[in-house]
Amino acid sequence: MSKNQVNWDNLFTYDTLVHAIAGSVGSVTAMTAFYPLDTIRSRLQVEDSRQAKGVFEMLRELVNEEGFESLYRGLEPVLTSLCASGFVYFYSFHGLRSVFGGDKKQHSAAKDLLLGAIAGAINVFLTTPFWVVNTRMKMQGAKLRKGDEVLRKYPEYRGILDGVFRIYATEGPKALWSSTLPSLILVCNPALQFMIYENLKRRAQVILGTDTLNAMIIFSLGAVAKSISTVVTYPLQIVQSKLRYGSDDVKNKAMLQIFAEMIKKYGFSSLYKGIEAKLMQTVLTTALMYLCYEKIALFVFQILGSKKSH
Image (cartoon, rainbow, N blue to C red; front, top):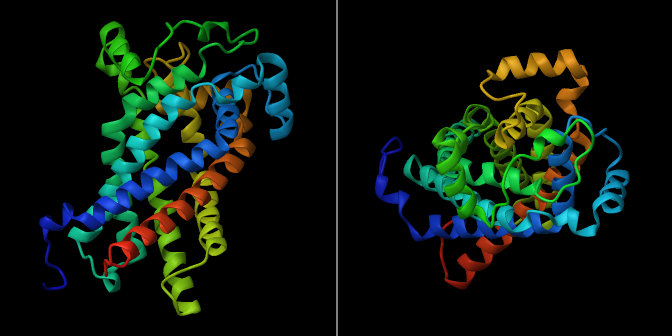
């Protein structure tokens, strides 16, 4: 096959499926381990009256106000959504990478960034309804503070599919894809993250003279990649959370208008509210996800004798 030849048959291969399953399992495992930090991040992004504090102080505050179970509220739908999202993203990324040049020598930072963005866009269109239901379910049973009572306006959803069907029936399909625009812009987050991670991994393999990196190196590379991508895109994530929940103060408003109103009402710092919890949660979660993903994929390929490099 020539260097620039495109082979769409490579989109449907066993190796791509292994990457997708490993990425999905890794994502679910990592989120389960650090879910309370994600709960804090969500509550800070959605509830305007809740003041940002230290992560451990926030954990104590939620437990005192709503009980220990509040830290794991909505875990099941999050894992369901993450399982689907992880599978779609990893399958799309590695499938497209195989289609447009599976040879490891043809991999580059620019190509990884482009393929990561395309995989992210595919993921957004297919899984956004799950994340909309997700954000709402995290608020079910929450003891809202004065000023946030208006958030208590949705019925109890029994699960992801129940939420999708009920939102579609009562609010229409537009509500299920309400955060699509910021989510599409936010594909730069995992795309940037994948580009940095894959580039760092290639450099580490060259420096160390091995294709198999140890657990600590993989964890560290994942943490560095996610830290950079999170800081760059965090303000968009706040708008995304508000749109997913469907708060009255953001409905039918343009993204730039929401930014302007947040800055005017709460100051520029409101665009980074909860970033401490987000950084701790997302960096640890992503680093553990990469570790699980790499080890699961390596294990499966070794067991089945695949020569495919990942």
